Every structure is written in structure tokens, then in C-alpha cells.
Length: 553
Image 1 (cartoon, one colour):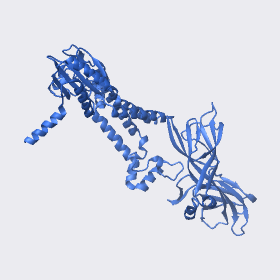
Image 2 (image 1 turned 90 degrees about the horizontal axis):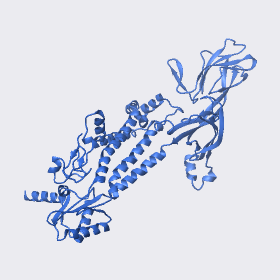
Image 3 (image 1 turned 120 degrees about the horizontal axis):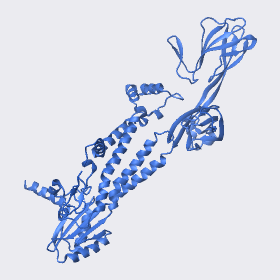
Image 4 (image 1 turned 90 degrees about the vertical axis):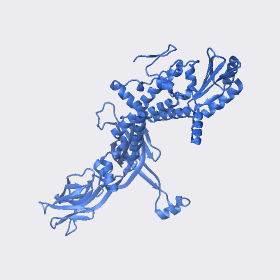
């Protein structure tokens, strides 16, 4: 668009309210106003100038403070909703590797219809949802565009400002004074000396003074925004694989498993150790608690071996390379390649195998023992004298009979049940029997039965696997954010203009972005030492006039 040429000869971008050079009002609204808006020095902002292309419309949308506040409210509201019920990570489901159906069952059972709605709307894993990440992205976009839309014209205006300004600019400042001086040049010299004592940067030009200090404080909000953008960028990076891992993993004694969230690494649990306080150790501190509550855990740890896939091996192959042995203790994680494996929980005495024997009911004679591996049970077990037991069906977590068929509610051997076919030389056709813990069912009276002898158990360790490459990015963003807060809160940009007019006149104007009371104290000190004209604070004058009008009415 065409530039606006001021009477002083300076060409200003379209949309400029005050001339970048002399400060003369360039719009009818600015000419009519008694106090000019100095937030952005009257400079042209892109969002208030262009509105034709789709890029202009997107820019103008995100540069709006109202839109930014609305997005912030949406982020805060959704974040609050995510705290109503436990998130997926903290839901106390019973299964080691819980499925979506188990999470749904937990929310439905615990929180009724509200829990079901909470799950189906995706609030149970909200902070990892795509729409929450879109909201964070929109917030970052709004901050970036709104900051650029304001900081660029503000920087250009402050950089180009002249010492001598047009009288109309001076008269439209909130603080303004005008009056005759006995010797204007002497007053200017005294004012320059006093301003330098007050740590102002003073510039002189053709009978005019511009005193300025703490301009850097104007950039505080934008430094603040930069820190927030870096912080939000770090949050979004957490959704990219490899930057952030926060997973849970359960592993049984003797088991070798790939580490969740750490591709190429495997962990073997060699032994789980649980130590409790004895009566002798706990007499002074925990004696009463032991008597009241029973054993108190002193330490629990898992002795593990870390492996990794060899270079060049195919993904999922068992060609592993030994890395190290380690004892994972609470607050002493296993560390490797940026990952930390924390000991977080445990479960004791899960069934590993069951030893049984086949006996003759009438004589009690045994045909031998067999052991069922509950993780990988065999189909047939050969015994003495040609007898054998076939495992027809296996239900790891028996949950009763539904629709005439036994069912298992999970693959974890919490309550194993079996359907056996028992074959001997006397019963070559075989006999069937359903065997569960403390329960045996037969379709007809059998001559033989499977009797439980013993069980082998194992402990399970619960680990949390964490890796966070974004931590330093978040820390950097937080530090920059706080620098911006301090920069904009504890300093303020102050300017004082003094210049000679016609007939021994002196014009005085001042502006600050905040803390006007302190600025007026400095002006009082300056006036008393330099014989400058008295000033008027237009805001105080307007308030006083309104009070007088109210009293008269």
C-alpha cells in the first residue's frame, strides 16, 4: 500500500498513527484525541493494515489478543478436565499389560456413567491426544504472530525517534507543561546535568533534549513470550518418538523382555529381593508400627542384566550383546543411553508352574508326577506304565462358566484351570476332568484323577522407563520466561522531552509505560533544579474535573 508522507517530509508505512520522525498525528482520530496512544509509538501494525489475502486473515486472527486469551482459556479448561479422574498412566488396572477394554472397564466400574463418558471422549489420555497438541500449537502460533506483529514496528519506531518533536506530539502526551523561561538555554543546560545525574541517556538537537532510560524494559514481554514459545516447543517435542519416554513395564523373575520405549534394548530379571525390618531393627522407630500393622518394607530391588541387539542384526532377533548387570533400587535407577529405569512397584508370588500327579482313586496308586509351565504348557505329559495326561484346554485366569463354556478374564495365571484327558492301559479311551483350584468337575464318575502336589511361584517387578531430551529445552524456556518477567516488572521505560518554542517558551513532555508516580517525582526534582515550566498530568486533571462536575450536580 502507498506510504503516508508527513509534513516534515518523512514517509511512513500505511496505517501509521504518529509520524515516526516528528510525532505529528497522521489520522483524524489522533488529531482529535487529547492524549495520544503510545503503546506502540503510533506505528503501523501489519494486522491493522492488511486484510486481503488468506495469509492476512490468518495473521490477523492469531495476532488478536482476544483470540490468544480464548486459546489460553481452552487449554486451561481442558487441562482441568484432565485432572477430574486419573489419567491412563495412573489408572490402577489389575493387568500387567492392560488393554483398552480393561481401562474402559476400570472407568466404568469406578466412576459409572461419568467414567464411561470420560473414557469415550478421550479425556483419560488427554495430554497425549492430537487435539490437545493442536491447542498447544495454536497457542504457540498466537504468541509468535502477536509478538512479531507488535515488536517489529515498536523496535523500528524507537530506533528512528528524533530528539526534536512537533509541538502537537508534545501537547498530546499525558504529562505536558508549557511556559516562558528567563533563559531557555540555561534551563536546558541545567536540565541536562540533572537528567544525567538521574542516569538518563541524554541527546541534544537544535534546542531540544530527549532523555531516555530503561528502554530495554519494553522488550520484557517479548522476552517473556520467547521463553514461553521455547517451553511450548519443548512440550510439542515430547510427542516425537525418541525425545520423551515415560512408560511402564512389568517383568517376571527369569524373564527376558525388550524394554518398553527403548528399541533395541532388553532386560532380564535375575532375582527380586524384598527386605523388611526385623523386630530388633525396628524397636526404636517402627516397633509400635510393626506390632500394629505387621512387616514394614525396608528395601525392594531387582537384580537385572541389560542386553542390546548387536549391530547388523535383524529387528526382533535374539542375537543380543551383554551390556551390564545392575541392582535397581528405589531412587537408584538403571541408566543407559539417556534412559532411566526406575523400580516403582512389585507383586509377590505369582504362579509360575504347578506340579501334579495322576492317581488311581480306588488304590491311591500314582502313575507319576508332571509339571505344567503356566506360561507355555505342553499338550501331552507321558507317565509311568504307558499312562499319559493330555492338556485339552487351559484357562490362566478362570472366571467361571458363561454360556456353558469356561472363560478366562486375563492371560495372567492368577487362577489357573485345566481340562485334562487321562489315559491308562485300563482306560485306553481316556477320561476327561475339569480341574481348578479347590474345584474338580467330571462328566461321569472317573476311575482316575489329577491331584495337585505343589506350585512354584515368582515375583514380578514394576519399572518406569523414562527418557527426556526436552528437559533442557523446557528449563531454557523457563529461565528466559522469568528473565522477561523480571525485565518487564522491575524496570520501566521513561522519556522526557524538553525543547524551546517561540518567544522564550519551553515545552516539557514525559511518558512512561508504567509507574507514573515515580516519573512525576523525578520531574519535580528536575523542575526545581532547572526552572522548567510546571506540568499537568492530564489523567489526574480529568479525574479532578469529573469529581467537580459530580459535586456540582
